Length: 127
Image (cartoon, rainbow, N blue to C red; front, top):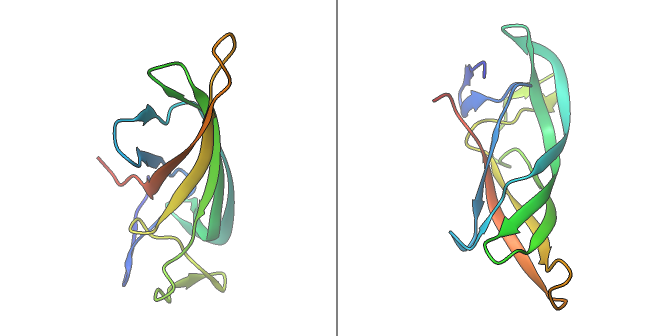
């Protein structure tokens, strides 16, 4: 991921990665497909667009050790106190985070059961 240092942190570019941390920890695995709907600015860092406004996402295929599967969705918004913009829109920085809320369901032939699930979501910085 390309990094642009700004007063409030590091700007997030189009090659971002998200980290999903189950809440409570170790109850289930937030694996599976991630579908995002990023909004990009016309401003670029190393030829890569900067994420602006709100990042909306859907997570599909989360699992538990006892065979439940589920989906969730959420978003990451810029911190309200952050004032850095690109193309007139607030940018997302590495320290911004959000919540993914969803439901886990049993798979037949198991008896029907549904339970809510939640993850804290953040951007992954350079490793």
